[in-house]
Image (cartoon, rainbow, N blue to C red):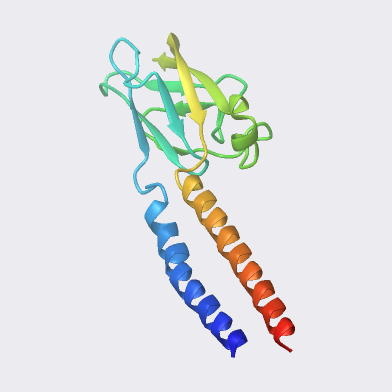
Length: 170
């Protein structure tokens, strides 16, 4: 009888946690439907000194006018598929050997990519760069994992305690 009671509690916990895991993933996921904008000003400065983006997010540099061609040049290290990104076209942040889904947590300093803004093919201002950061939903998964570990440990303790009590009554 005690065993069936424990199984009912385990089932109840699973039924309570399952929707949080399924719906929480979509709720806490960063919005990647729109590219992260970086606005270039006419003096070649940018709206934000350092843009933070996650792997698989898109970044777009917006030119101040259509009379000149602007681009972001990353030199020999780029988080994109190309080293030069023209203004107006979104580019997706990709994993590199130095900055991938593991190293973005372990070695965040390797996930910084400096670039220069070019206007009509000439460098006009070096910019601090793009920093690749962990996705926003990381904290949710850490809390969920700790909660599951705590609940599992509690039920193992309860089951052991009930078995000892049952064996002492015999």
